[in-house]
Length: 191
Image (cartoon, rainbow, N blue to C red; front, side, top):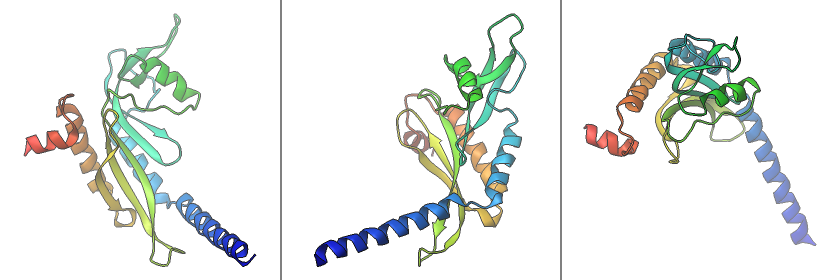
């Protein structure tokens, strides 16, 4: 009987710790959204924005409340005689990506388009009941490989300039990296 009580007590402690950790991760400072807005402003084009018929370039879109994706895009004409021309992901399903995003479905980056992802996390203090601060992360996505962390900074340190420089460098890698090389192989070859 004592063993069962101890297991129940341990389960309750673990559940409380997990709930506290999830709560701390859900509360991000307003600066995180400002950083996403700054990057979106610099890129200029968003998924499903109306654009010129010959537009090609970078676009951004948000996945969930916490992620910002930066990826190659191009113009797609919606069906119909009066269909608008909108920015979609630069692959054969680009028009579908516009429709899915408009319906607020999850739009995943296609495997054949390298891209960058910005997200945020809260670093817990030593006592795990408080948080030290939010951090911004910039990840490189390619093929089926896991995302590679290419930049990390404290949000409270005003990382906008450093983040924008890291985004610019990451986008230059997307353009310059041959499809047959992984990012580590490309960076090793580049040295």
